[in-house]
Amino acid sequence: MEKMREIKAALFDLDGVVFDTEPQYTVFWGEQCREFHPEHPGLEYEIKGQTLVQIYDAWFSGPLADVRPLLTERLNRFEQQMQYVYIDGFEHFLACLHEKGVKTAVVTSSNQPKMEAVYARHPEFKDMFDAILTSEDFSASKPDPDCYLKAAQRLGVDHEHCVVFEDSFNGLKSGRAAEMYVVGLATTNPADSIRPLCDEVIKDYIHFKL
Image 1 (cartoon, rainbow, N blue to C red):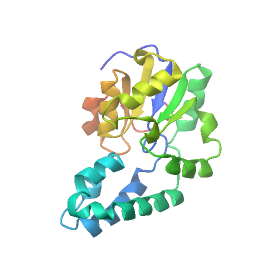
Image 2 (cartoon, rainbow, N blue to C red):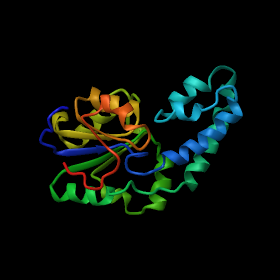
Image 3 (cartoon, helix red, strand yellow):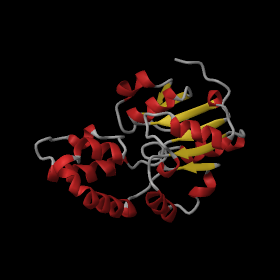
Image 4 (cartoon, rainbow, N blue to C red):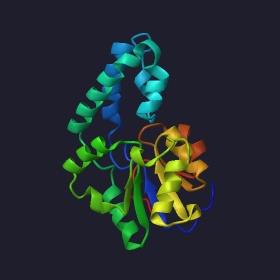
């Protein structure tokens, strides 16, 4: 395990890291996969943590490319109705970071329409972080390090002094590629499966301290 550096910024993915939304996405994608890929049972578990572009490229291209607008419409409608419940201990943990003078940012592959749904449920959300970066801010998706490097730049903090909180394989690889300290949350994938990509694994933020 890499030794913890002096942390000046904490960078959080959104789903499965700030909000416990992954079980809801599993339900949504389970319905879509059973409709369009009945030959591949359990596909919704294989695509966990992937961006919409990655899902489309891998599973809804060629003859199925025409259903993308329908899926996007369904997903947007679903996200407007989702429950955005904070991961246990997150709000207290974030407050402790602010007390220590640690800057914070959300770094998510979600788009602005999704974030508007979040803000509607949680009017306080924008004021909780020093920056919020969405898919519109990046030129490359995770596992590319672009998103986390841009977040560090936005906060004015060197990558060596940043910690990344992620739950998906691509997100963890992104934090690794950015050469940041990586904390993996075992909310989406089993702890043993993500441990090789992390410096530390946690199940939630209760009792966790930097």
